[in-house]
Image 1 (cartoon, helix red, strand yellow):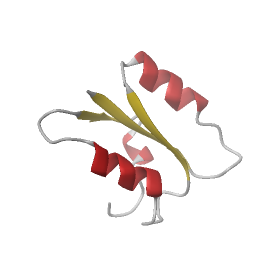
Image 2 (tube, one colour):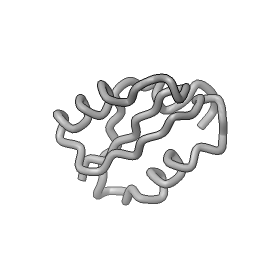
Image 3 (cartoon, rainbow, N blue to C red):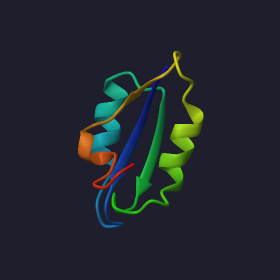
Image 4 (spheres, rainbow, N blue to C red):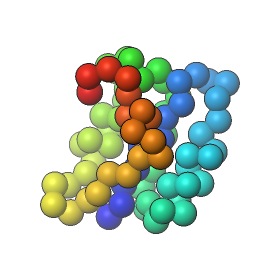
Length: 72
């Protein structure tokens, strides 16, 4: 299954472009979050990591910097 993680840094930003692109790429499950990438407590990011199954799922991101800007 293609699983994805979409993130914007502030509440005023819109996830729409990322979500549309990920849907077009065939992602079946999209975890969405509005939180800065420097925070380590990102509940949807954690949920995505717990959801994916090694050897079965592929994680897709709109841009690599959407994963975060610090060590993850």
